[in-house]
Image 1 (cartoon, rainbow, N blue to C red):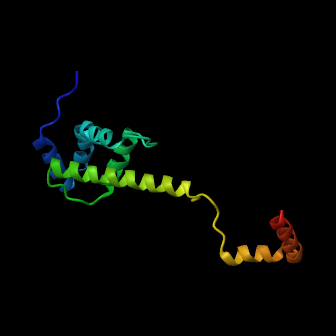
Image 2 (cartoon, rainbow, N blue to C red):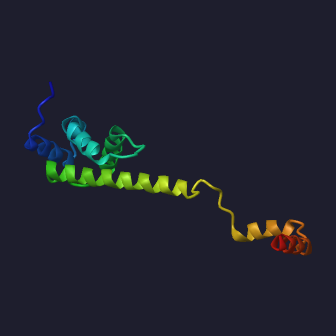
Length: 137
């Protein structure tokens, strides 16, 4: 049997207490909103994702805990949490796309690459002769 979700006013009361500096209030918040955050994450994570919904919730909560945002209400907190999750998913997708485009390759300045080619013994006349023979075939 699932636990009943907390009353929105209870979450807002805890957010107010946390904003006023109550350290214990911040500790009470996550258990109260975790199921809602998890449902948000489940709705956002679909398709070929490598990021799990649980990891998304935890990463978003860490970002929210570091933020110095005065939460006005439960709805405000959940809205900012949804935006944080979206940002995390976009960052994750960008990192994956960059890796696919050779993001892990070592970048070499153009001057260093040209210097490497200058150091190679390349017989341009022999290359031209070989290309001419190839073209005639």
